[in-house]
Every structure is written in C-alpha cells, then in structure tokens.
Image (cartoon, rainbow, N blue to C red):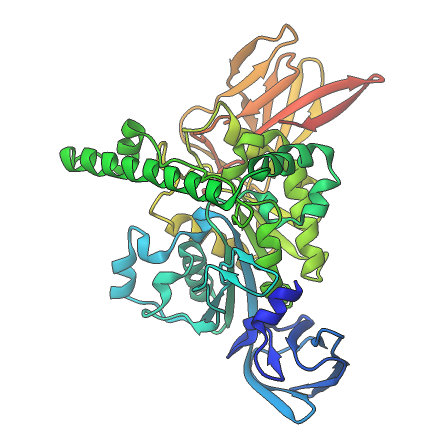
Length: 512
C-alpha cells in the first residue's frame, strides 16, 4: 500500500487518482475524497456549503468526509493544505462500481454492434473512470506493466466509449433513457482471467483452511525454488502454445468461413489458460486487491455490480465461501457495509467440467440468500455454448441498467413454502405472472438415489411438485435452456435445493 501511494504522489498536494479531474460523487449520500500531501498537516475541503477539515497521517495520506448533498448538479471542490490548493469540478449523481473478470471487462469496441453505436451515438450525461490494471508494485515503486497509467474521469463520448466495459456502457444508456436528467458515474475495476481470490488479501484467505489449501498452497508450490530464468522459460513455452493455437484457429476459420467462432473453438480447442504462475503475476492470490483496490477504495458508490466466477470453476465447491468473503472485504474497504451488490448469475457455457458452472450459479444464489443487500441478476437465458466471451453484450447491459434504476427489482427466485413427504411447493419471488418457453422440466432425486424428470404444475406464481424427492433442481447444468420467466421476461434463476429431515422437522438447503 505504501509503495502504491508513493507511486501515485506527485507534488505537495494531490487528490487520489480517481479524482484527477472532473469527478462524479453520489448525491443524497455521504462521500469521501482522499489524497496525499505532506505528513501530519491540516487539510481543508470546501464544497457547496460545507467546510470540512482533517489531518494527513505520517505517510501524508488524508481523507475528507462530506455530508450528503441532496441535489444533482455541479459544483467546485477546493482542497487546501499549507500554501497549496487543488480544485476539481464535482458532479452530483449516481455512482456505480462494475467489477469482475473478462466478460464485464469486454470492451465496447469488440462487440457485435459497436459501429451501430458510433453511427447513432446516444445523448449521455455519463462519466467513467477505468481503474489502471496495475499487476504488481515493487518495494522501490516500480510498476508492472510500466504503461498502466494513472486513470482519469472521462465524459463518455463516441471518441472514448470503445475502451470502456460494454456491459457498463449499455447499462448507462438504459439508465439515461429512463432518466435523461440523471448524472451517471461509472467506475470500472476488473481484470480478465481472474479468480475471486486475487481480489482478497492473502491474510484473509489464510484464515480459511479450505481457501488456503485451494489457492495459497498451489501458488506457493508453483513459485517455490525457482529462479527468474525458470519463470522466463515457462513463459516462453506458454507463449509458444498460445501462438500454435492461434495459428491453428486462424487456419480453420479461413478454411471454414461459414463456421462461427464458437464452433471453431469447439473444433480446435480453446486458448491455453492459465499462464504459468510467477511471483509478480496478477493471478497470484491477493495481488489485485493490493494494486487496484486502493485506487477505488476512497470512492463512495450507490451500487456495485460483480460479474465473475468463470475462473473459479476448478474450485466451484468453495465459491460460496470465497464470494461471501470478497463481498464482506470490499464493503469494509469501501466503508459501506450496506452497499447494494448486484451479483450476475453466470450465463450458459458448455465447455467446463460437469456441472462446474451450475455449482458457481448455485453459490451465487446462496450468497444472495445469505447476505443482506445482495441481489441476484439471472442471465442464464444468454451465453454461447462454446464461446466464453459472447460479443453481444447489449441484452445483459440493458438488463443490469434496468435493475440499477430500481433497487427493488429482482430476478425470479425460488422460495420453498412447503415440503412434505409427497409434495413440494415453491413460490417464485419477483413474479406477478409466469411465462413459459417450452415445457418446464425439473430433476428430482428419489430416496433410492435415482434422478427422474418432473413436469411440475403451476398455481399462479407457485410451482408444485408431487412425489417424494430429497433433492430437486432446475437448469442445473453448464449450458441451461431456461423455460420459466416472469412477466418482464426475466428468467427464473437456476437452482438446486435439498431437503433434510432432522428432529421431525424440515430444513431446506441450497447446496452445491
């Protein structure tokens, strides 16, 4: 952390990188502004009718706390320390943190409809900040990669939108269309190919014997006893594999131009992943928590969007614990233990070990049912069977945008209201009316251990399953084909529920 702050500090008074120019802060919610100056000096912040003061610590860091401003609009922030002053334009609006891995990182310029967006660019009062993807900071302040930059707020325009998250862009467009006067602030903090473990400090992972064994031990084993020459040779061999794959894929596509990228990858295989581990790899446990999280932790958000889990499929049985730890940790870092978090339940994708993504979705549902102010957004009706990175992000982004505009919105979720020896009743929360695409088929496990197909009956927004089953599941597979939707055409979340009978009572478990 100290090395990062030294790298970010320029001059005698500097606001945190997220406040390098015009910035967006929430209206109707208290917020913080941080920065660096000389050690142990008084710092004053002036904004609207507020004048707040604090002292920098022994490292020169400071945080100014401002009360909520109850109107949208603009104003000038002044920050003073000794004889130095910083000024910034502040926009009061709604702020959102978009985080996760490659599918939420997927750039607008790489999407299916990018040129159409440019040809008819929407009117936006929206700004975005992309957190620099710093992978490693050495003890002497050396940054990897060297061109990571420091990041800055930018008003979203046709000139820069291509480099931002496509999902975040479409969400902003959807929100703006519903509220043209709202000022929108989006902070992107993501990195493709990452496990949730890279966004959690190692000391927190170490407290769990299971997470330590699954994530810390393999990392230590992978780097132990190796020299820089060993790491370099491993990287060279890995790059050769990637180049061979890319040439093979390009040759197949050239020879079969009618075949989709998804089918081509299904034929020739997917890009080799992950790269070999090394001490400075961004895939190391806790790595990005210490290099990227400090940039956004001074900020205050209205809501957070977390779209991740693809890279934890090899430890899907641990994802509920990992995800809950991540959300609790981030809320602490952001200084907001009630921050509304939107969990994106993974879409369909077939090329994973049996039921691995189904287990990740189950963990996401479990965490949404466990933690306060966490809601699930199901997108199981999207995705491509053999392409982990679909290029049409508009449906997902627009759906998220509709959720962000309505804090009470929710995907259809299962809620067991009754489970006896011969009858299971499940209320579909978040629905006033159910719609069907095909015949809804569930799977039930009998007490003899046999799985059978079940066609339930429906009573308004309640589904009824007759029979004695100890486990019931719906769309519990890597590539689901959902059949149950609510009146807004939102898909019922995939799930598996288990009945346990103890002390003559029922206990319903959402288990992997």
